[in-house]
Length: 227
Picture 1 (cartoon, one colour):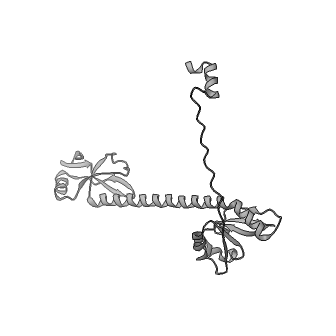
Picture 2 (picture 1 turned 120 degrees about the vertical axis):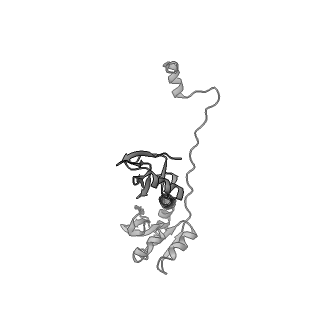
Picture 3 (picture 1 turned 45 degrees about the vertical axis):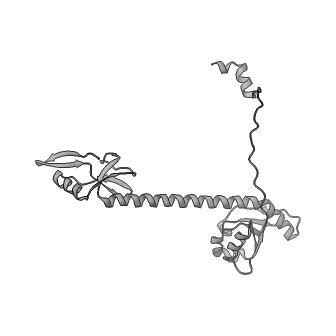
């Protein structure tokens, strides 16, 4: 059970410290009340011991367990749940961004080849950077003019629908094509390309038994292994 600190005020014994309340994501000091009133709250269940998670504000001591009203304990639980939900949503958002960047990277070379073949030109297409002007897709320019867009974001297509309608949208799968087609103009040209396979991570070569690395040889020669 959490302890409280008592003090005498005007010949009345009061709970000077130990009660806490939760507000705006922090635990702060609760009211100072006579001991008899505090005991009545405890017996009635109006205050309960609660193991806090969020930090405290001065002058409340950083006690791991505090006396508080049940609604404040519930308020902290709601606050924590909301924070965890925002954290999950942020992780998902970052994962979606990374997946988009990976698709765009895997389609860059196929997109350049497609544009040259589609336009039947010897000119070299120029690949730009993701831009809101192209629904966060990557524009591919030919002779200084946008010709195609690599993997635009479906949810951003409506705001630039007119600009995109004159271009070829290049995507990595049929599912992506369908998502974008649902947001684009009916006449929008969307082409599915085969992404380049991701490069396999290099595996460090293991030394054969009895062999040493150059660093180990230099260390032994200088006697650093004996220090």
